[in-house]
Length: 218
Image (cartoon, rainbow, N blue to C red; front, side, top):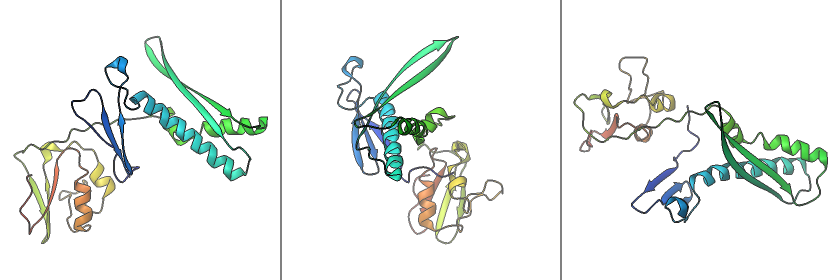
């Protein structure tokens, strides 16, 4: 398993209702709720962000295909909206997209672009099976700790904290192998790479330190 992004999308909220600062690899922006929901409408709300993702992905996918074909289509627009309906106790979200061309496009081209639009990566994600896993980072101490060391570094594992997110052994299997008893091998990769992977542990079950330094709180 390998994450899409090297650095995750990071969000933080303070006391200001309901402004969230969202950080991505190249900057940050504000997400907010509309005034009718108690916010100040200082940025796009979560529903708008969801639709924006699909809208931009559709446009990018269409532009890539048009450019590859060498067609003369200078501009494309997409309108996206959604609603929910409930039938027999099951709620379904329907997302409608309207594709608008500002210049003459043949019917054959339109039909092909309609097919391509439905294949955009975000559309596939939304129409496929999605599992959302939520982990709670912990900083508290726990009684049982197991150290895995070599001459240079130590990796500390706290079994009581482990939420089995599988990030460690799917992303750095040369160090983490749950199929064996001594499942952490500090010699399996560079200290820098191990440290980077340990920081991705969401539960706080893993800690890393250099033996020459004062151990970090574990």
